[in-house]
Length: 383
Image 1 (spheres, rainbow, N blue to C red):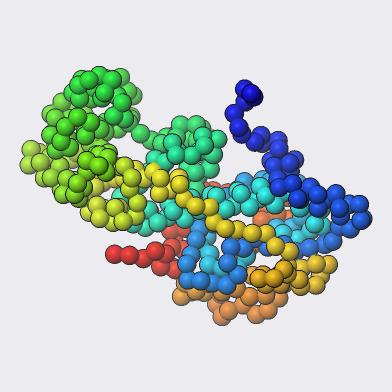
Image 2: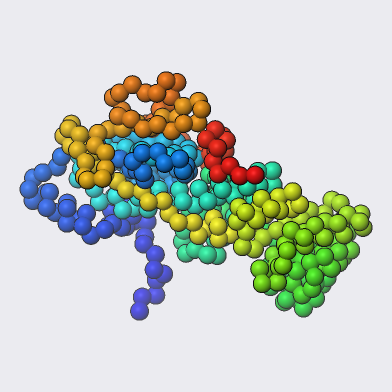
């Protein structure tokens, strides 16, 4: 039995052996036949707009994968919302990038699914603090990918420490139920935390370990006084009942005793519906599985031009394409050499030229782009 974790190395991703076997068989066959066609290949999910937008993410890693290869790549900006048509286009000799298809699609598909789910949460509670708490649901090696996808969608932070080191962001989080259980007494645990942890860490007490949320919240406020920044309610669904009513009760009782400045944070199995239901009562949310367990998008890479001629397999559209955003939020797909829609903005822009990355990757700019785009296209609009 190997003593290593079951993790593919970065070296395997970079040298292209993190791939499906048939790409290596394809290389072998084409090389034996002295055949290496010039192609245009496009990454798409749907061929035509469907009315259902998603968020493009994973572009930074995808660009790093293709960096140094003798190819030109155009792609949408990270954080862009798209609805059909290409999100990326690669031009080059096929053998120069064939073996990288598997990893390329993995980078784009998984993080785009995460970012799309995170944007659903962000749009459900636009004025609240929303943090990604779902790293415990995924393989630890991909936690940074999950948390970066959450940031691309505009979430305010995340909980995973090592991901924070990779991304250059500090992880958020205060105390779990385990801390209270380890002390066996709520007040003792809250007070010990206050004494031990750096002053810049918010004092947010978990308040549903042994007794009623209202009871523990008031006890935390009395124990820590002005030091208490907030309470967190993480009650399991089997004991939750009407969660909105519980949060209303906690807010009422805190306010009645002069603790109006104590904020309420809610976590535990929350999705967009729960955020919409609680956003007028809670100050912040921790969202876990809805973001981290998001299904990857079903991207595919297809050759659409062969030695200058339009081609495609059955079910796909031939020819080099472009996608456009119109001022009314419309998403349009057309051939790249044809007239664009009136006032349409071309969404595929240079990413790599002759192997060199010609774009910066700023996660805050991507988040701003995602939120602006979401407003423009009416992404998941619900009241």
